[in-house]
Length: 248
Ligand code: MLT
Image (cartoon, rainbow, N blue to C red; front, side):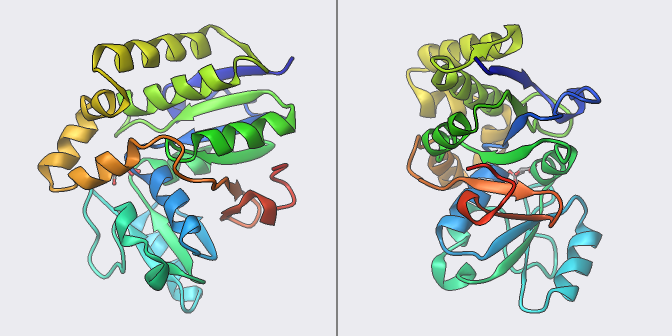
């Protein structure tokens, strides 16, 4: 049986931890939710970039692309789009390459470049990603992006749900079991998934900034069939079926 492990922050990944393994990168609020939604709405691809300067340069080189993302939750000057899923409508992103930089999520994707396949996971596409990952029959590492170097409850809850869904077909190690119990406990104590996500620090910050609708959308389970995969060779995230290396 393949295994499932987890890291609470991408910086906790050991040197060879991802070799021959599948990574599921999770940033519920909001990067991986936004990437999933953008591809659902017909974006051609998403190019995750660590820094604002690099994003500006790549967008300049890729004519016709849109410059997207946030710093401190806010769209940087000159960017076309911020990091709210609702901004990524078909009429805006359809057929476009999106150059995306976010504080934690796009950085986490970059840190997983050594994995065999890199799936973009969120609550919204949880069931679809579980099915795709299961079909690879490979060991899995759940990679929580966190917030500014701190563990994020919403990512731990999502990782816990991934672990729980993969349990019938995979062996969970102690950390995977731990996130599963933590996620189940949070959902139980908060009266449901949305309450649990809302109780996180970053959700509170987003609500205070006027992004409550993003938190609500990101808490919806399985509303997308999208399985975005990051190909670290091309630097692009595309739906799994469009990549050779994705295995999905
Ligand atoms: C991130 O990558 O840090 C997040 O997506 C931040 C945000 O909520 O925009």
